[in-house]
Image 1 (cartoon, rainbow, N blue to C red):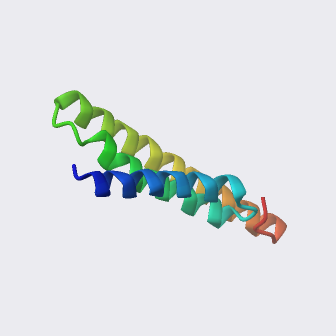
Image 2: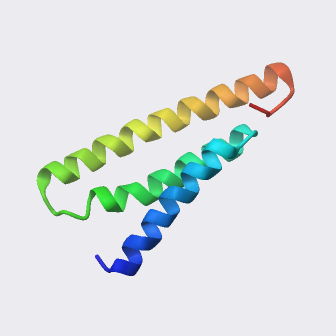
Length: 86
C-alpha cells in the first residue's frame, strides 16, 4: 500500500473519530462511525492472509449490525420524543 493512501486512511480514521466524539446529533454520530469503518477495513485487509481477511469480515458484519441497531434506536427515539439530539 502506498504511503499516501495509508496516510489518507489514517486521516479518515482520525476524522471519523473526531466527528463521532464531537457530534450532538445522532445522524452525525452515525456518519462518523461509518467513516471509521470505511477507513479501517482496508487497513485490516492489507495483509493478504486468511486470518486478516476473516477478521475484516467479522468486523464488517459486527459493525453493520451495530449501525443498523443504532439507526433503529435513533429513529425510534426521534419518533417518540421528536428530537434528534444526543
